[in-house]
Length: 427
Ligand SMILES: [Mg+2]
Image 1 (tube, rainbow, N blue to C red):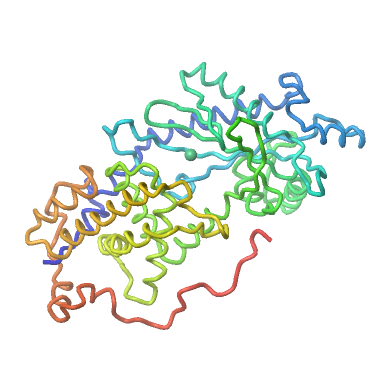
Image 2 (cartoon, helix red, strand yellow):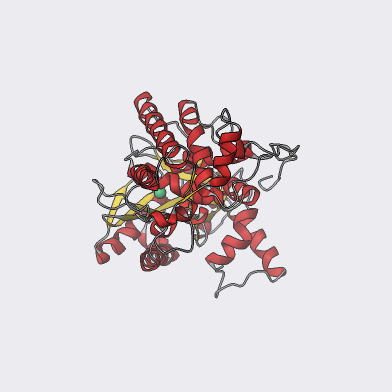
C-alpha cells in the first residue's frame, strides 16, 4: 500500500522530522556570539599588527622589497579584514546533530575571513604580499587568547583555523586574501551610490561587505591560505562563492524542497555513521535528481516522494565519481577510498530498500513507521496519525503495475534539462 509520509517529514506539526532537525534558536545564537567574539578579536588584534607580529613573518620577502622600492608604508600591505559566513549556515541546510554518537557529531559553523591585500608581481603573476604562514599564525595567536579566556580549544587544521567550542560544536575560519585595489574600488563605487555605510574611519560593516562587495570580487586573484603536510603555508586559488551560488541557483530553480531533502539525507548520513560522506556530495545528488526530474510531475507537497526519488538514484550516483559542479576537473569525492565508496553505496542501497518498504509496499502504517525510523533515526516522529494511505498512488500502481512510479512519470514536457546561456558573475 503506498503511504504518504510527507506530514511526518515536514508540516506544521511540532513533532515532524524537519522541526526536530532544526538547530535550537538558543544554540544558534550562542554560536553566532562565539563567531562574533572571534571576529572582534581578530579585527582588533590586526589593527596594530606591527606591534604584535614580526613584519618579516607576516609579509613575504618579495613584497617587502617591492613595497620598500615604492617607498610604500609596510603597514598598508593589507587592510582591515571582512567576514562572511560559508557552508551550511549560508546554504540554510544546518541540522542539529544527532545525539549520543561516539565521537559526538559537531555542528560546523564555517566563517570566511577576507583580508584586502596588496598584490605584488612574483614569477610573472600577482601574489598576495601577506605570507600564508604568517597569516595563519597571527590568526591562531589572536584566537588562542580568546580560547583561553572562554575554555575553547584551538585545533590545527590545514585549510582553516578551527575553534572547538564544546564537544558538539566548532567554528572554522577560512583565511582568504583578496586584492586591496579592487576591494577599494568596489567600496568607493558602492559608497558613491550610497549602497553601503561605513562605521567610522575606513571600515565597512560585514553585512555591507557580504551584500555589496563579496559577490563582485573577481575570482582570479582570490586566494585561500593552506598548509602543506610539513606545516608550511601556501596560497591556493579558491572561490567559495561558486558552490554557494550553484546551490542557491538550484533552490531557485527547483524550490525549497532541494534544501529539505538535502537535510533529510544529511540526517540519514549522521544516523548511519557515514562520516566522510560530505554534505556537498549529498547535495549534488539531490540537485542532480531534481534536474533530471524536470519536465515530470513535480514533487509538490511530497517531500517523501522527492526523498524516495533521490534514494532510488543514490546507489548509482555514489558508485561513480562525483564531479565538483563548479570547478572543472575537481571532484567532491576525492578523499574517498574504495572501501569508503563501498560503505556509502551499501548504505544507500539499504536506504532505498527501506523507503520502498515504507512508502510503496508497506502493509500497515506501523510497518511504514518502523522503516522510516530505521532509515532516519529516532527524531522521525513516532506518530502514525502523520502517515496516511496514498490512494492516488495506489490507483496508479494498479493501473500500471510495471511502473510503480507512474505518478512521477506523467506529463513530460519539452523544458530543457539544462539552463541555456552562462552567467558572468566571476568574469
Ligand atoms: Mg568546516
